[in-house]
Image 1 (cartoon, rainbow, N blue to C red):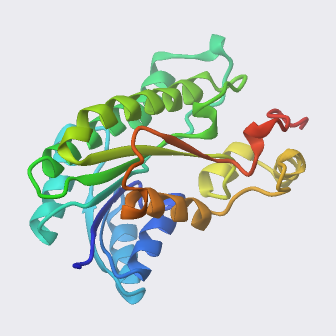
Image 2: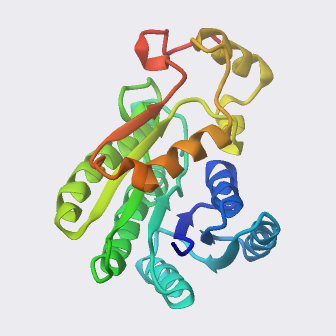
Length: 256
């Protein structure tokens, strides 16, 4: 069996980067998208050292033409598209509802929602025309499944991803395209560091998590690889929470 072709948006940091490296270690052909050429080129070199083949395409998922080019370049370079991980996202600005503005709405929803929709649009376009379809994994969040005070824009955008995932799964099923989502809980990424702001807050978060710690990006990457593989061949339209037991009943709002 030939090595799978995997496309990852938002691949230059955090969960996206960890997933790209995990696929490379398995010998995959990995296409990474992001907004910074220097970091992209460096990541491709690292992917090759890990045993995979890599291609970086500069792309901002908020712009249709750039997403189209990203997908087209992947197919032109490697011949097909087997797995796509739509990981690009932003936490936006933490603010109460009374602090929402046009700008903060657009900054969050253009990346998290529009970016996911545009990625799906062009990934479907590629996968519908090839034998075997493909597998797409969107990134939501544990807060795409519950609410969180003061974070309405982020929460709303990640709920939207869950709904979009279900609809895309129904549209893709007859074409052999599976669409699922992962919903990470607290995960030690650059976004997590920004959102928590201090070691004291991070310690408080750890104290209420059933497993006593936040996830590491490799743990999320492993779940993405599972959903993208034939081992998950009858799973579509689902959102997999990767939260260390958070939604099983632990407090959601640590006292900080």
